[in-house]
Every structure is written in C-alpha cells, then in structure tokens.
Amino acid sequence: MIPIYKPYLEGNETKYVNDCLESTWISSRGSYIEKFEKAVRDFVGCKYTSSCSNGTTALDLAFKALEIGEGDEVITTNFTYVASTNVILANGAKPIFVDIETETWNINPDLIESKITPNTKAIIIANIYGVLPNLKKINEICSKYNLYLIEDAAESLGAEYDGVKSGNIGTISTFSFFGNKTITTGEGGMVLTNDESLYDKIEVLKNQGNSRTQKYYHDMLGFNYRMTNIQAAIGLAQMEQIDKILEIKANIYNYYLKNLGSDIIYQKTLKNSTSSFWIVTALFESVEIKEKLIKELEKNNIETRPLFFPIDELPFYEKAEGEFISKDIYNRGICLPSFPGLKMDELDKIIQIIKKCIYG
Ligand SMILES: Cc1ncc(COP(=O)(O)O)c(C=O)c1O
Image 1: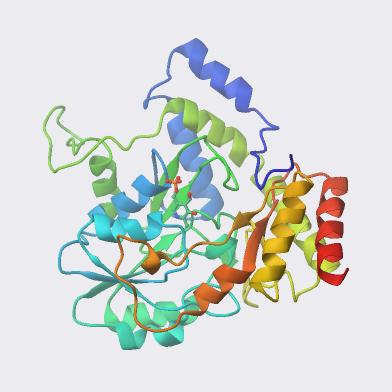
Image 2 (image 1 turned 45 degrees about the horizontal axis):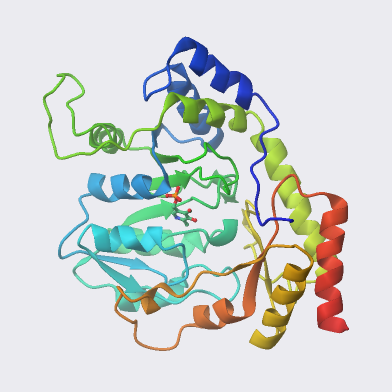
C-alpha cells in the first residue's frame, strides 16, 4: 500500500528517545523540551515557543490566552480541518464563515470586511495544505479593526510570506506535530508568539494554571496540555532534518505538477510566498472522474483522501448562508500521497494511473 503519509524518521530519533529512557526523563520535564522549543524558535524566527500535547490544545491555549469566548465572533472559513473551527465553538464564541479564494483555497480577504461586527474579535487562518493566504490584505484588515490574527500553521511549517516564516505570522500561531505533519513528535503541538505576556500566560495555562513562582498555587483555571520529553526528543531529531524534508516535499510537488499539469495540480501559491507543500491535492473536472480515479488508485493499493468537508454542513454547526466555492472544491478534489519517503517509481505509478484514467 502506498499511503497518503508516513513520517520520515531518518535521523537521531531513536538515539534521543533512548537517551530519555536511559536517563528516566520521560515525562514533561527534561532537556529535550527546551532544545526542541529553541530549534523551532530559531527556525521560525519568533521570540517565544511553548510546546504542548497536540495542535488542538495549541489552538485552545491561543484562544484562552487571548480571552476569546462568550459573545465574541471569530472569522474563519468552512474549508479547514475541523479542529481549527471547533476551538471557536468550544470556547463559547461564534464562527463566522467566509468563503475561500479559488486560487489559494484560503480565506478570501475581499469577503471579510462585510462580516465584521462590533463583536468580531479575531480572524483565524489555517494555511490549507501548506499554502498561505493573502496576508497583506488580511493584516491590513486586522490593523484597521483591531483584530487578533490567529495563525493555525499546523500544515504550513516551512512556508513563507514576504520572507516571514509561517509560525511567526499571527498574534499567536500554532503548530501540530501529528504523524502526518511535515515534522512529527507522534502527537504534539506548539504555540508561538512574539508577545512575552501572552507566552507567560500560555505557560501557566498548559500547566494546570499553576503559578510560575509558587508550587500548588493556581493563578487561573488551566489543564494539563504539556508535551513529554520523549515527544520533544523526536521533535528535535526531526528539526535537525527540516531543510531536507522540505526540499524533498517541494520536489514531490514539482514532479506531480510537471507531469500532471496545472489543470490538475491546481491549488496556487501567491507570488510573494512559498508553500510547505504539505499535501499535494488534485482537482478534477467532475465528481464522476474523481470517484472513478479514487477506485482505480485503490485497486492499485494507492491511498487517497478526500479534501476537507465544508465545516458549516456538519451536524453541530449552523449552516452558513449562500453558496460557497469550497463545496465545489471538496466535491472534485482529492489528496495524493505526499510523504518524503515516496519513491520515484511509486510517484510514476500514481501519475500514470491518473493520466490513464483522465485521458484514456
Ligand atoms: C489545520 C489544522 N489545524 C489543527 C489540527 C489539529 O492538530 P492535532 O491533530 O495535532 O490536534 C490539524 C491537524 O491535524 C490541522 O490540519
């Protein structure tokens, strides 16, 4: 089976994990935590990084640190992984859905201003499949209306906009290090910011709200969202290979693009930005062609995944008014195998099957 994704564990992962086991530092204290946080900080170029248990808790920490809750509205799209929208509901705020752009599949900045009300507190962007939105316009809107920008960078580690790395774009940015992400810690996440007081708050919130100076005195309501030293050990080994991983992934994307063409490998990166090429997606002329192709690839032991299902159509969300292009993109698109260990003959096989299915 050629899967959609497989982690690339070709460096010091085993060595560093064994080091944790031998030293008995296997819980959430230990030297790898700070080393991993520093490695991400140095790569991204932001001032503060706080590791946590996964990308979902990272988002929750962002919301709690910014005190977004009851009565607040948060602008988002219906075309993202559900965690980045659930965090709005789970914190008692209201998601306001804006459609995506045809090119980047990210929030369409031209549709944002008409959705802003006195209750709007933040915009959340999710950098879909590693591609960044039009941040120039989004930043202008955030400044004009005094809104927080939350960057859910789970899929975009390594991407850049105007030379600024993803993870250093929002008031608070977050990463996921799930097994299918550009770098992984098994499960894991990180919160990033340049604001010291937000960072201090996040460190307290992820540690049961425990004061940073007095043990068993809790400044605020918090939970245990900590990362373990073992996870951080894997993460450090992964960060040592980040440039190589990103280069291989860019090559995979370019190979799909060269051989299938921009009518099929469709999602576009804006001129002043680069993508992390997290997952290569393909868009077909009709739902029928897409369905036929999924079956053909499956017969050949090749995994595909659907694109994100429009979130506002899930049973616990209120359907947004109007027609969204995200629905059409969901209907006609699929995710293709995009992991760094993908071999050339496997890539060629996938491409051949797609071409045969489309062109006969
Ligand atoms: C855009 C986005 N946000 C949030 C998450 C949640 O991260 P995690 O699975 O680590 O909780 C993911 C990935 O799974 C994601 O793709």
